[in-house]
Length: 138
View 1 (tube, one colour):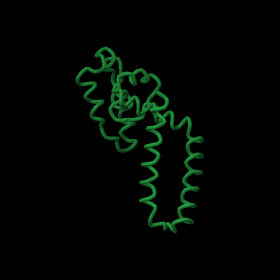
View 2 (cartoon, helix red, strand yellow):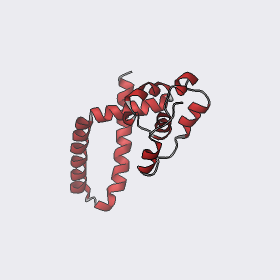
View 3 (spheres, rainbow, N blue to C red):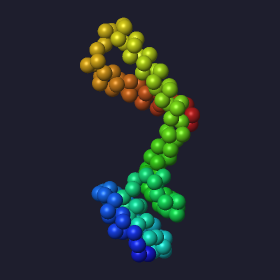
View 4 (cartoon, rainbow, N blue to C red):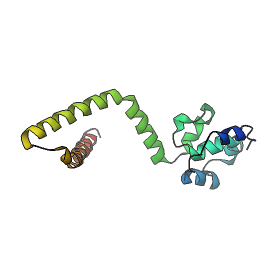
């Protein structure tokens, strides 16, 4: 590893994020080849082991994403897709929620105190709908 020349500046910036145990294990168990680790600066190791979002990593660290566990890469990809399609998703969800809530209040006299139960049922409905759609696109 190369020496970290800005350590004091970074330490003065404020509290650090907690370590991500799986990332520390990747390094310790050589899930990332030693020659790659040896080519990183100390600050890159620290970022890798503490910053969960690779989008916030310096560009010279982008290749490290390939060493993350498959599930983590999938979550990152999903987050990026959600951001990419945010306008479509938010517009559709807002229209659906407003319509359902309005109809529910009008037809069943639902109260604000019923919101948690309504949310729970809406999430169940969305989950089942998404599962069915994913089956259809296989």
